[in-house]
Amino acid sequence: MERDTYNSKLLTWGIWITGLATAGFMVADVMVRPPAFWLALMPVYALAAFALLHSFTYLGSRRAIWFLALGLILPFISEYLGANFGAIFGSQWFAHARDMRVNVGLMLPGRIPLTAVLTWYGLLYLVFISAVYLLQARTSDVSSFATVPLVGALLMACWQLSAGPATVGRSLMGFAQNGFYHHVPLSSFVGWFVTTMFVLLFFQIVEPSAVDAGRFGQPEQRLAPLSFAMYGACVLYASTICLRMNATGAGWLGVVVFLVFMLAMAARARTPQPSPQLHQAPSTTT
Image (tube, rainbow, N blue to C red; front, side, top):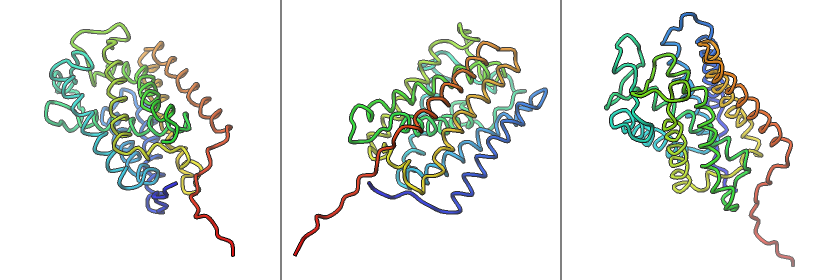
């Protein structure tokens, strides 16, 4: 198995700092009443930094750069089409375009908040790593390799069960026509699912060797489980926001997603890990 991961103390410290910062900002955002909207933006920036540093450790520099490019550019295109043409996600709009009192941070061309694109990048990385681990996927196993984008997209849609209502409820995003699920239309979930599946599939085509669960057994990958914990924290964070806004259905559904995900990870951790494939030259006897 190719060993191109990094075991840098600087990266290790960066991962811990950005991970703790993400969790800290989430807790601070939940505790503030009424909510300070700049606090709602800080977990996004911290999570994106965590995903970037973690990807260099897990994927290696070349794959990490590819994932960064695809995880930013393709979601931006999707959000641009959704916000300006009503495609993919339905007819959606961001609060900054309708209500200048709501701060959604730096705006990109097409009235797309930078935080929206960074949220995509951070969550895409978390669901990709989680899907590879849950499936114990490898390039040599066609079925698991092909299923990674599907499982990753399912994890993203499950996160949206609570994140969608939380975002709409805080007036950070809205839809021209309210949907059936806490004002979120079905098309939004379809858009998140399809976009995630397409981005992960495209990344696998470009870097197929990135799908290798054998990496989790390497000593230098001791920080890999932090990405699983971070996905669970994102789900629980959105669920708590929903419960605080009295969107109890979405909030408790998010709690269920969190518990099921953690139980699945715990069950997977008890199963034997695939051993690395060592390529040795045949020995010669004299």
